[in-house]
Figure (cartoon, one colour):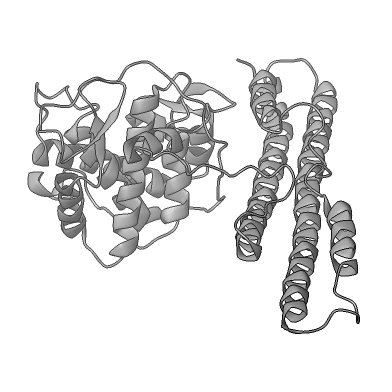
Length: 399
């Protein structure tokens, strides 16, 4: 998939989220004019001077309360109509802004010469378009969430006026059905495919004389290019240390190569992220570890498992900033043992908490994929106090 095709596919997903056709403007919910007329008629039915006494007083009081209720419902109807109208405006603005981003990207891309390496010239255009698109979606979601909160508040005010009094067109929302937290993890922890695809990367000379090419995403490659030789050394040592420690603490059930989808895998990802967080900072680590999962066709369960366990590791490091590598390793082992991490369920198409599946009982992920969430890079550079030293793992001879 070309860089432009990847951008356009992502744009189409974002645009589809805003729906089709004209959004409702709120007029069907706003019956305030009719309610105000009813309020006037009720007020006109108040007892006159010709009727006095206790019965007249009771009637006058009830009549006044009914008029006040109609007036309050009229105000609430008008507020509800206004909020629905605001939501329509947000949707319309989001559509217009997304269309403008697409127009800008396609126009700018048309000026790029058709030649070898053209994708490198396209990348700044696509990156800006993707960032603008993410900002539009996030802004619209935030505004719509605020509107939804105010509408829920109006529902409570309707109830306070009178449980039986609802605005025209109001439909009581049923409570949401209970959800399985593991299904929520599977849906939440997904990332989009890297627009730049994947490639084989290695550092420049002379470091490439001592390394083999690594198959990484385009985003990973750009982040690696920005690192110094010492940072690349530390990153590689952390990777090796996490792999060695995972095998030591959670031996692969079927031999040394069986390190995917199981407790070994869960530990490795969590510990890898904990060590990177101490060395490079939480934001950079989050960007890098998420970019690592942007390979084309990454199975949904494996992707969610890795992204969730990555976050567990970063949280452990953030909560224990003074922990040494051995203490971090113990904390990560405790997280796997206690079920803070997840593994692949025996069926292969679901997740399971790591304390619900015995070691050796995890399944193998199915090839199903789910739509990814747009990447939200922080742009943070490497930073942090931890120098891992030499690779090897705590239980196998230090770092």
